[in-house]
Amino acid sequence: MKVQNFIAEFIGTFALIFIGAGALAISPGNLVAVAVAHGLVIVAFVYAYGHISGTHINPAVTLGLLVAGEIQWTAAIGYWVVQFAGGIAGALLLKAILPMETDLGVTILTTVETGGAFTVTQVQGLFVEIILTFFLVNTILNTAVSGKVENFAGLAIGLTLVLCILMGGPLTRASLNPARTLGPAIAAANYANLWLYFVGPFAGGVLAALLYIGVFKKNDVATE
Picture 1 (tube, rainbow, N blue to C red):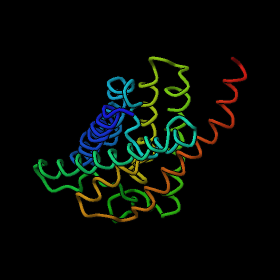
Picture 2 (cartoon, rainbow, N blue to C red):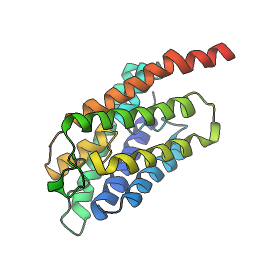
Picture 3 (spheres, one colour):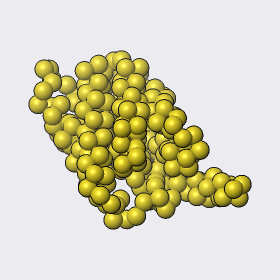
Picture 4 (cartoon, rainbow, N blue to C red):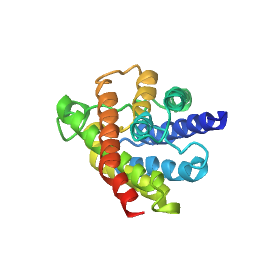
């Protein structure tokens, strides 16, 4: 594993938090803008760095690929370190430059008290994060990893994230990414339900990987 891989993962994760969480911090009521901001970062960096690091920029994605046998433990650990570092750096820079007091795009369960239309329990939020992360990692495995769609993988992955945020944003702010949660949580000193945003995405990534190696990857081999 080359140092370029880790630099690419750091920059990509930094960009996801700086742009994605930044869009949420600046325009918390504009769900479409927030979803598109996150999705476009994914599209851009899949094409920019996909050939270098695979553009995981998400510890849950890295875990999914680890379970699927697409990355080694030593590389995965290195990816996790730089992903979390990139997320924290992106959030701290947001805190330094935003011209107003915001929550820095923290991922929180939505309640009536926080201005949401719904009251989301921890269990409900956990399942939202599991399911949506499953969709995201499932798309990655069956496009970028399998190589079946070639040049359209970045678009498919970015659009999947947009769709997931459009549904999950009003409920959990649709993290799907422990680094996306940890950075703003540290910058805003708001650690509410932090465990949920680790357990949910990691579980979703593992489930997607198990489905891939148990069903879809075997089918690909059988048809070759």
